[in-house]
Image (cartoon, rainbow, N blue to C red; front, side, top):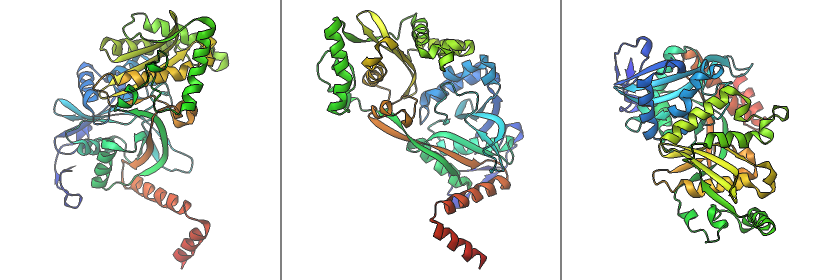
Length: 420
């Protein structure tokens, strides 16, 4: 049975439709769940088209980013792709860890999550791709399709936008399906939005003019630029921002520079891409694909002709993300990591179709997060996709969280009133 989400919530119309292994979905939409390793050329091409026009861009779910995990067996064996189809096009796509787990010892239900324990490398935003034509219906089809595969389970959506079009469509879809959700986490992360005008009016200083500094305080600008100017006076070297996006040796340069610092030393907890052969192979495949399509920026900092920092940025649809950055630790006092990100903010919006830049890290990064001009909230949501049991668990959990938030006197009063 399928529901027509164009109808008001209290006037749902249901029509018969064979479900089979493809799940249940609103009219005209069908849902499949397949292992990442079974994504073929046709699905990948449709996936790419969806990524280019999704209502909320998510470069982390671009197929050029995800499909290369097929060769990284430890990760790929856990990844499943939920595909919602509208004839020959994809209406929605979500990446899930299809092996049920318990959220906690006190939570008695199986949980299907978008956050798999083995794919911690770079998959920092895991919200679905959804097409613009019928976004609420596409999300409903996704939920109902997962229900066919995971009876009695809960779905955990991590790093889900707390605002804008995708959040609105999700709210409408769950309301019309009669589903309640639990918000288990909410955090504000650094972010940069268009318009670029705020960065275009920088001064003509040959050093400061290379970076997006207009949103920073005068004191912060001084702290960043004084060491660079002092180093220039002492050595005669000038710090320059250089575009290395088309450099055919870019991946080699980045791997060498990253491995030269502490990240290349496993004994110091380093996790450079060169430490793990699978990780490095994935990195080289991803950067080559985005570079080939003109969707990779390599913003490098140079002292004279020596590259001392590289920031890699990927674009998909109307959004861009920070993939990785690294710098020469001999020049750590020059704040090259921060300056590299500020150079990216200044340059990324030179491309007119990009509306947002997400560096891909959280607010807990302290000063690095505060140096960004904007903030955006992401939430973790849990909702029932299974039978009545999962709905009852969510309802009970909501009640528990509501009571837990009350002052102790109110809790005791509620308890006594219920007993009476």
